[in-house]
Image 1 (cartoon, rainbow, N blue to C red):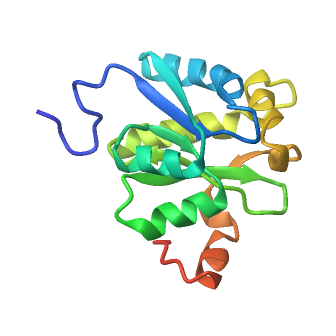
Image 2 (image 1 turned 135 degrees about the vertical axis):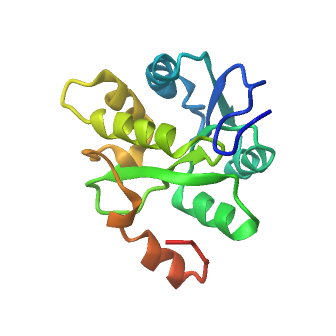
Length: 168
């Protein structure tokens, strides 16, 4: 039996996912992070990269993704489409524009969500190869200093301007 807030006992791996940017699937950029997260949760990881953001959102709705990197537009689409099985974890920090957040499955307990949030926030050191790899193929994030909480950014104003109801 699965308790509320815990991944299914049948889960054998954690799935990180994103979408292609031009002709880059970004899998290599997520690989170092997947290793860190796999070690943190003592579970193998898999990285999926979808051809379009719409395909990624469909996979999220099918509960095939545990951690997702989406654009701001993709996040607004996801939140406006139906009950999302994911919640925002962190966002890129220090770049002056609202980039899509990192999302985590709501099936993870608050403790595990918090632990992962701390992991993301600790990635931003000058010599951190994991953070550098993440930024390399997110051109809009090249100036990012790290990750921060969602509440500290202009998502709320942006989503309200577009008429999207996001629960902040």
